[in-house]
Image 1 (spheres, rainbow, N blue to C red):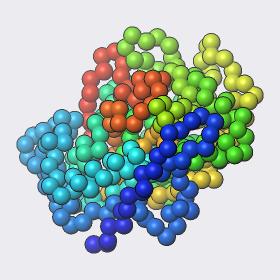
Image 2 (cartoon, one colour; image 1 turned 180 degrees about the vertical axis):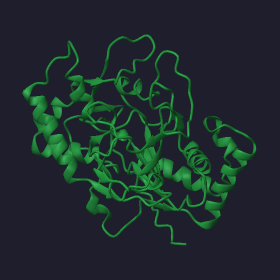
Image 3 (cartoon, rainbow, N blue to C red; image 1 turned 90 degrees about the horizontal axis):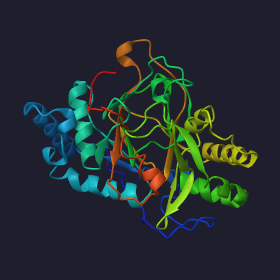
Image 4 (cartoon, rainbow, N blue to C red; image 1 turned 90 degrees about the vertical axis):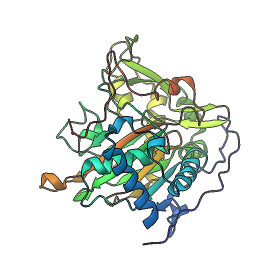
Length: 352
């Protein structure tokens, strides 16, 4: 068993002010981790046994996946490590990878239960779509990225932030080639924009129109939500993606066209993100977690295996911390989980 390389950051934070550089442990560059995997929490044999035993107990008790709580998933020693990971996500670097969960020889149900239980020690699962799906499946279903959400395709995805406090992904099978999980610090991105073009930072505080993919919350009729890309709440910085949701929002009736300055700001934002990214190549059983308010993520395009059972397949959780990290109201109301009229929560092991 490899040594656990996990090391917490200083968790440094100074209250952020829009238009000024931000000093925070969540501001990092990929070269900061050259020769280091301090962000990787390697499970030891005892922690692995705890997680697998806890998963098997929930199965033996007949507890439905969606009903598993932290109390159902006792981890006598691993719980302390996961508490430190959670604190690092909220107050530190804003990303982590838990490595070592066995998936070979275990059913998707067993692995999903272990993933869910570990996730329950980090946050509370929220719905990822209007069908109430709490457990997502990231795999190529042959979709067109122009028409469906990117996780259903094998296309390159631009840097973005999901509609939850944390995004957690568990790798069942990596791609034949490509498909790297790419992350970058949105705090570093902001600081770099401030150095190069401070006037464009202000442009990204606009409340942009974002396409809701037809998933309208109960009582709402507008096909878009509105959120700034850059915002600060109670001294804490948050960023959203400048990705497909804004571009699709531009096609909606009544949505004003982006100004030249806004387009220029978005272009620079995307360019910088690509230059400050850390690439993570998944191993089976890897669990990556990013804190969406300070960490953006994307994915490179990939080539899949011809055999269906070997194709790239990740399980996904959107986790809420119930306010552990302050965000503005525009963001807060969009990270409660995706629901429409009549949504019933479920955690399906099926891809559809």
